[in-house]
Image 1 (cartoon, one colour):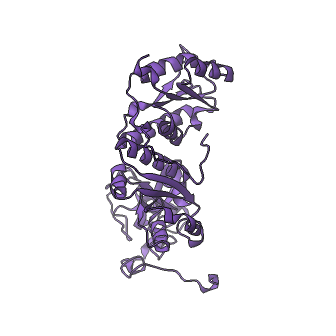
Image 2 (cartoon, one colour):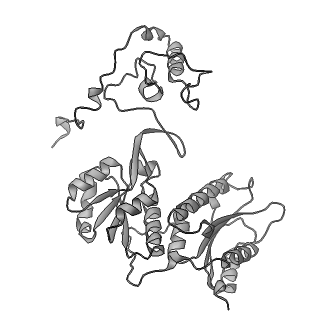
Image 3 (cartoon, rainbow over the protein chains, first blue to last red):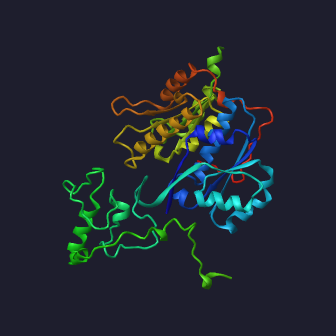
Length: 222
Length: 153
């Protein structure tokens, strides 16, 4: 799931300053799961912004609405009937959501309320970690299901670096050494020989540097 | 009557607080001319920051929560969660320029349990010392319209 965090209130208020009629638009998917931009968070932010406007003697109208998914056109369409009432939309979607809404309604500024963070795994309630970079060329098989690119501070494909202490990373002792985990897992499955292979530098062209990535599946298209 | 008596308090409370039945709730609200608005919760862990924010936005100079004593929550950790949510709400109102003291939590005591009426009177006295909330200063032409206005309780 895509994780995000709300931007600081001052930044949000600064971006909204020129606008008098604002729609706070939540998203009921990933950002709701990580408690950043769902219906509850949208209600909180809209409420706080209305109060802030009163405290600072500003006349601003702030309404709120949450769609199930901001990154899919069909879910945005219901805004057609109401979008004209507003000077700006404050989107609590991820970066993809903000841009999808922006593309649909080009005549109105769509302002991001969140900082989109990473592709996250939910470890516990209120605790998300980045275990996947979305590199476009998954190598988890070779590394026992532990990604050295996402989980090793040095992102080395031919490890370990030799600096870990008691299984903890020397760069950030708060996290386990990814290479210790890889070796433990491969040993468990009797597959340690996979590490005898030297892995060449990662081809990052599959992640970035060639413009935005896209997936086209003709069998899924109408 | 001094100006400080005109404050309004939104008071959320766990139903396990002593003497917090519906009859008690009505009696307390009546005794305080509805300057104290009471909101019972099945457990303080049911409270969300949006409840406190909505109360501050729509009717209250301060919004407080009363929980069971630590370690005796019927649902084990409801009051611990509530504590963190109140803290989050305080951070949020501070970020818009409102005093964090307008939101608070009172954790009941195992040794000296107090009734809902006692808690309410103490909290009301405390918040009466504050000035009126600037967040209730509603402009004449302000309207509130949420397409999906939910009853957050």
